[in-house]
Image 1 (cartoon, rainbow, N blue to C red):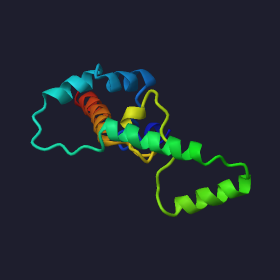
Image 2: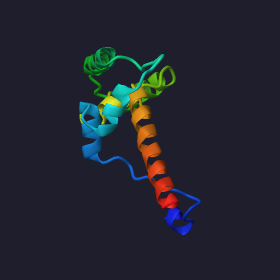
Image 3: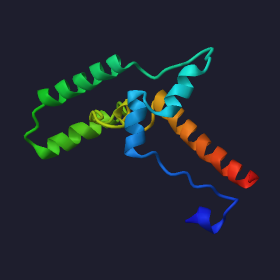
Length: 132
């Protein structure tokens, strides 16, 4: 809405579609090909998928081990646990889950990489339209 109200001053970039995200995770999206051809001196990664899966399994086992019968006690335990770590419930497997960090909120390195590329592509398209 604001980008239409202030054309040339603000740019709205549409979020990637579910299809795009699915193709990104499979390595089939055209931005993946661009990324693979880049020469990278140093790439720092989030955690490996293997480590992430191990953490998710540990969290599941912990939840299964604590069979909460008392709702108030469950709330109290969750509150106490939240003071000591910031890990949310495990991210359900599905489209987009490979692009989210272990906290379940923020993108991981791949997620930030593709968001950046997606936004950059939108900016470049807008600049080309202005040049025409």
